[in-house]
Image (tube, rainbow over the protein chains, first blue to last red):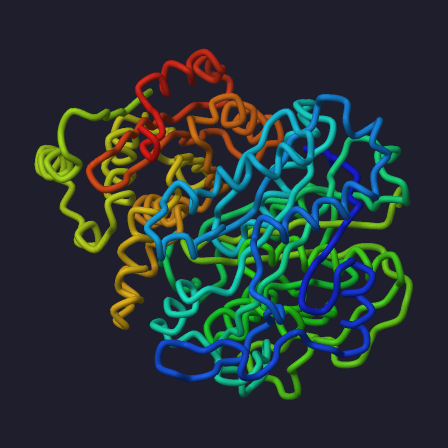
Length: 367
Length: 187
């Protein structure tokens, strides 16, 4: 199949680091992390590092502010043409409501419907596919726009740091006692983070007030191996990236940098090194942004893509914070000094529980 | 092609019967949560009915599922165990709705496209549009599509495998598939 292009832009991020994509990016470039020690008190009475807001957040308000920021970047007469879809990307939504056993309030679709109304979308839906939710939601948006089903799709993702998720990761021994260090020899698990991020994918460049970038879409693939551990061979990730490159008519040499998943668990980062080695992408500059935002679950794919959109806009790639020494069996070209050079395109990847993997490619407008 | 099971018997009764009748014999099955058990049983029934050629192409099949309650069935159990200070990985790993997609892929060595959608009622039009786009972009030649919803003793499930170019791939036929399915949270 030939390459299909849609336009992506109007990106917004609300995280402990800032309230716009630009502000978040300037903090990232300055090497500032949202993860702080002692932010989350777990059941054992230990204070764990996390990237959290100073005040407890309502996921509704957080998403609403984030979406309003994206909407402000659109030519509304183009966007509001009745052919729009809203996609929520979230793993747990308002899961704290389970403390009161209020199941309807914890429902993901109730949250999606409220946000879809705010967007003025004709339809709203939730993608809940573990840690690949954000990347997969953007791929779905692209495919539906290319198929002519919608003209524009607003994709917004959010998850909050909750006792529910923290205790679960803790039971898997997957939480790091120190701020996470993706790909480093001394990495010891994830740091959780909370944030909201949103992007718009549209058939027309004129939907956006400022110049959008070109979205070439992507693919997903299952490892068919294990529900809570990545494949030892990186099978699903290799399959997804291979399909994404092929569908875009590109080869691995055409990718300027990789914005990878890099959760900082021993197994995930090792799996990624094996996968990128198999695809001969060891020399392609690679970063994980988890060291800045923590693992924001359903928001991760969108927040990380929004940051790399800034990279394309400013021709710079930030360093992989937390990395000092090689810690994977296969060598990767981890970015340790800010890259400043003309950038054409990047590959975004994500992998998650349930053995799922996704990847997509974004490039400069009209290359 | 269609496998479906609506209310009328408790999920445990249904699963016990079908597991035995179909001689599934899969050790991992007993560790799964309710959502995964229902998905695995129904997908097994469908896959057994595929032609030899279709079975050989299983590796590339897309699995696109939908429900209304996400993983709330296991979420409630995990939340209770957290409050007791005894959270267990055996429950936590099922607190994501797409785990059922993963279980189906593992059992049948399916490496294709994955998607899990949450909506109040079956998202028939979106599922149909998405499956059509998977065929049109060459990402899949066959697609398992369906609804798997379970919360306590309420459940509802309908699954189908649609083939590229088949006339079954239309909103009308998907509506038929989903006519028995409904969200279990608010009814």
